[in-house]
Amino acid sequence: MSVTLGLVSRKLLPRTLTLSRNLSFTQQHEDLRTTTRKIIESDINPYIDQWEKEGMFDAHKVFKILGNAGLLGITRDTKYGGLGLDYSFVVAFNEEIGYHCNAGGPVTGIGVQTEMAQPALARFGSDELKQQFLAPTIAGDYVACVGVSEPEGGSDVAAVRTTAKRVGDDYVINGGKMWTTNGYQADWMCLLANTSTEGGPHRNKSLFCFPLKTKGVTIARKIPKLGLWSSDTSQSYFEDVRIPAKYMIGEEGMGFIYQMMQFQDERMCVLPTSTRGMDRMIDETINYCRQRKTFGKPLIDNQVVHFRLAELKAEVECLRSLTYRAADMMIAGEDVTYLASIGKLKAGRLVREVVDACLQFWGGMGYSEETLIARAFRDSRAMSIAGGGNEIMLGIIAKFMDILPGKSKTK
Image (cartoon, rainbow, N blue to C red; front, side):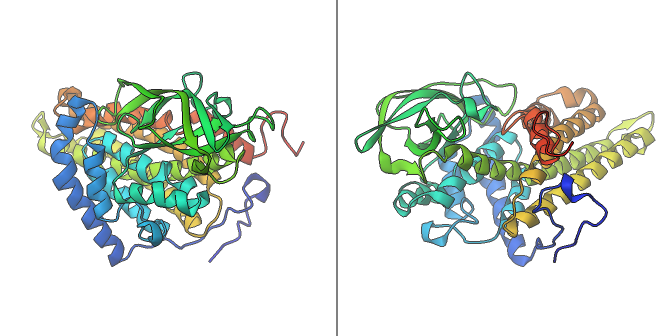
């Protein structure tokens, strides 16, 4: 059911923005949650401290376990090993990993595998390409990554310099990628490259399934980071790498548009993981403040503490409502760019506020590596950078509001 926004000027909103209620959780969702939670508890959390020290989680091992459970292709076509379910099940899955996983590294890597490297291939790839790359990615036999950011620019996708030149039945790739999550372990990359010098920066790019175990590919290093220690992040170089022309995803020159669509899947993935991650930090802080006593009473009894936690919870609930509203639109097949951008912006800001406030109530323990809140403090900073910085999100929102300088239609 859709509701007309009678009191809000429709000029300030995307034409597709409606209020609907398609999202609901059933026993089937609860079964998926239970399966996810059991895998996290048995196959991820026991190894996280080790992976944090090593600088990456074992993606091949984790993805194979998740793949065997059917969790790496929840909405994908059953023909390629997916479950063929609607987006509400993706929300349920991401809420579980967001809450129960003891570090942000594996959460980030799983999101890249499921919602960042797959969407364009699933939507626009040929059947042959899906059989060769999508099916083993869903099964957990391949680790996937996304090759967009480069040393000269991250959020400015139009500035990509990597080239793919057609030579007979092949494309020859030259260039390199930076800040590639899963890139150190990946078997293939969803690569964005320039295939032409014509048509402008938005029409001269194409997406490819790019095997990384190919002559001419150099995975130069695993980049050390402020947080997300157990998520491997690589820099790579490509020198005269030949791949078959049939590895192109969809049409030549449509890569920028495909990637912009793919970014919406990425930003939507962030929302349920971050809201439930914030729930976890608040819950952990409540438990600690109940046990920790100062001046003869539990910390939680101080009004400044329980009021602040209540305020944070209220903010998280508001973001969850936006998340579910955007998920409704995904289920209905509507354009989620506007709400996904708002959600990504707010999530990146709110998660930092939540972990900072919660860490303060932990006192010296919160500054210790022994606590999850310290890890969350480090990991959360990436939220406002990765997948499009806050400023990029504000630009997108301003565009929908028709207020960008020199581009406004209404004066």
